[in-house]
Image (cartoon, rainbow, N blue to C red; front, top):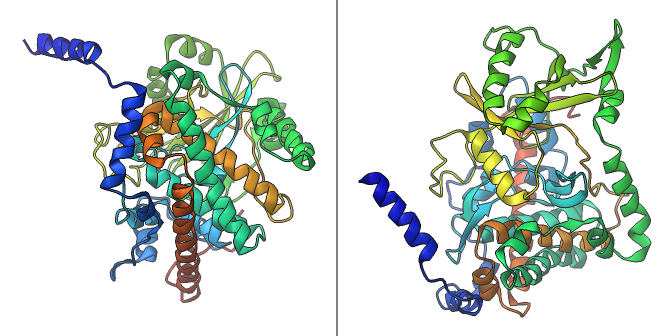
Amino acid sequence: MAKQSKSQAMLVHFTASRLSIEERFAAGKALREQVPRESHALLPDPAPERDPIAVLKAQALTRLQRLVPVRHARMQESPFAFLRGAAAIMAADLVATPRSGLMVQACGDMHVANIGLYASAERNLVMAINDFDETHLGPWEWDLKRLAASALVAAEYLGADPARQREAARMVAAGYRTKLREYGKMGFMQVWYDRIDQSAVLDAFSADAHKKVEASFAKARGRDHLQVLGKMTDLVDDQHRIRELHPFVIRETHTEDGEPVYDVLGELLEAYLASLPEDRRILLKRYRILDVVRKVVGVGSVGTRCWVILLSGADDDDPLFLQVKEAQPSVLAPYFTSEEDSGSQGRRVVRGQRMIQGSPDIFLGWCELRGRHFYVRQLRDMKGGIDITPGVVKPRHFVEYCQLCGWALALAHAKSGDAARIAGYMGKSEVMDEAIADFAEAYGERTREDHRLLLAAIARGDLPVASEAR
């Protein structure tokens, strides 16, 4: 009976009448009556108990303690670096902000450095969101506001004046709004197969930036497994070994729990292979392990458990690097319920990436081991992007890049959410763009203050900090 009821419910789902595109746009527009677009400009005053340093300390409890000082060292570098590591802090701040009620598969840690180039399954370079550790069901506004705030703070880091900083945030919102409106009028399959390819990326920049953008394409294309082999390994007794760089890349014989690394690795690979389609399992089983190391990655992820496995295929010119990265509960999980909250966090990351990215890594999978959850992907497989470093990218070119970032987020949200409703809510005018820019300015100031609190906590010895960050 239960099976029949489930089948009937499925039939009802696929035979129920659906609103037209025009009706969905109108339904989104109607939401403005309850939540005016201008209200998104507001950042409520922080609660008296708000303590960003306490959030960082709480996160440190589940991480490798010897690496926690490295995380703090990276976050102290600038307000932009702080924002990159402060996804949990910002999520708590966003709870008090207005939202329309429309939900998507949110990135959860949406900032300008988490968008870049990668190789599609067809080996074409495309631009998209490239970090999914915090992906979860969530409001579209939260991703957009975090992305816009990061654009403003990053523009300041690059030396932009306040007007251009605001323009960077505004262009994120404008790029998101205009592209989402296009997606709202398209068929679902059209949206699913849409990509931001190299020509689209190039077209977004003014002519004097094309040479640098094309150089970034070439650099990304060169980041294959052979390039990583030459950069990360040495020949030891005629066999490649990953080069150690303490404390960021280290070779261990035992885990922190005292178990032999290779014993754990065998169990991990067995569980990981079970998550892959049969054709990928057959392909991966043709490789042999040469080496495994621990590696420190990112800013917000520092301290989570991460390994890099070097495998060899047909010969020395056929290497494969896999990254095994711990997946902890999303920073959005305390605020929104998802059916995956009690399941595998690695599967949550993989599911979110497949939904958001559309054409991900062929070896993307997950596993669980000793109560910890992991996901697995290729390391640096044609990955690249804009180098957000002062002196490398001009502020005016960065503003152009920010519109692309808005497009990338719109494409991600259109795949899992109702693009027509969100677009109907945002409208054709620049009202929402200006509101998001206002919010970004307010959150930029809060980020600068939080960064000052971090520096003060480090100075008084309240937070440990490493002497070397990279």
